[in-house]
Image 1 (cartoon, rainbow, N blue to C red):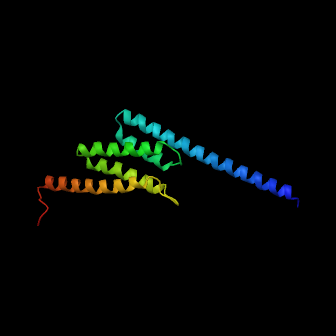
Image 2: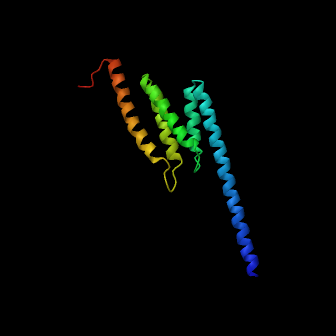
Image 3: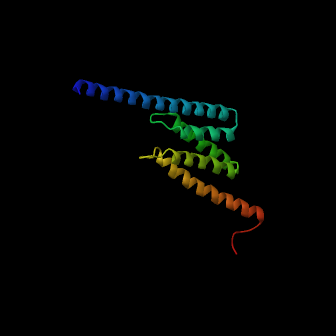
Length: 145
C-alpha cells in the first residue's frame, strides 16, 4: 500500500472525526442555550417552577465554553433563595437539588463547577433543618422528649 494513501486516509478520518465532534458540541450547545433562554422567559414571567426545570435541563446540556451553564446555576440559586425567604422550603429544596443533580449528571473525567455541588449540599442541609423546625413548630412539638 502506498504511504501517501495511508496518510491521506488517516487525515480524512481525523477530519471527519473532528467535524462529527464539532457537530455534537454545536447541537448540545444550541439546545442548552435554548433551554436557558426559555428559563429566562419563565423567570421574567414569574413562573419560577417552570424556570427550575428549564435551567436544570440547560445544565444537563453542558458543553465546555457554554456560558449559559453558570448563568443557569446562578438563577437556580436565586430561585432557591427566594423560596427560602418566603418559607416555601419544599420549592427551595427542589431548586437547590435541581442545581446539584444537574451537575452530578454532567460529571465525567472531571466535574465542572464542583464548588456549586458543595454549596448546594450545604444549603440543602440548612433548608432541611429549617423545614423540620417549621414542621415541629406547626405541630406544637419542641423537639425534645
